[in-house]
Image 1 (cartoon, rainbow, N blue to C red):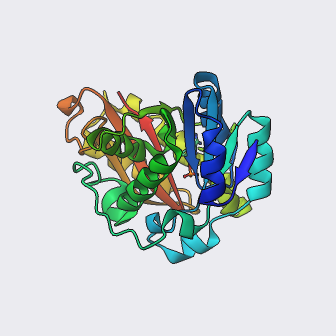
Image 2 (cartoon, protein in one colour; image 1 turned 90 degrees about the horizontal axis):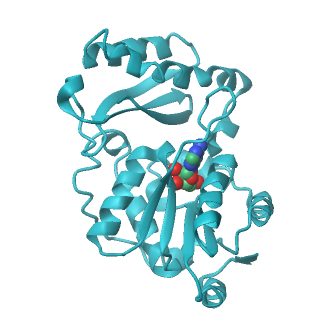
Length: 278
Ligand code: AMP
């Protein structure tokens, strides 16, 4: 496995992978089994697997979150090597943004709810970094986690719209044994918060059972109250959305497929999760 820490090193190493399909897994590092599950999908599907590790400043709208984001490059590389990765790209900010990126992307309105209004600029920052990485890595396949449901939908949208010809593969959310979605941010939780955090999934996974019993608005209120009953947790939002348009639904019959997504504070850490309702 080669670890390229500059653009020049990467481009040189990438040339050696030109005789087969390349699968790409973009990450911000602090890798856990959730990331590795994406790598495993890529290793199975593609001849070569490239992983990037880059904490992208343009997708953070909270400077404290950016500053405290865990960085564990050595341990990450050890995990990736064991998982069969061929090439790691761990560039500096100057490699990805030689000058400030001022591009504004058309996200097709998919950012109008959920994380969009709560983290202004986040998805435009994701589009900036992902398109830049796609241009450099030139993969045939790219693997993203359902953990970030809205992100995959938005990546699929601009990949198609910009004609990249890259197949975006959505991989299932990997969870801890107690149900908490694996996340690099879990390491920032206090022991009491870590103990409380599985309560989020425990509550939201009951959403399908609520369909026969109450309206969408009542279900949202019920789940919000149940999560907030735990004093370590504070719901920022819970929404039921049409899984394809990502617009909120008012009635269970409003969409063929409904996804519930939420953001919950275990302050100052912010956790997101989602489940399929129908
Ligand atoms: P991040 O490093 O948080 O930007 O995540 C990199 C990729 O890993 C994204 O596509 C995430 O959706 C995915 N990912 C993060 N956590 C999980 C998880 N628990 N299960 C599956 N994929 C995940």
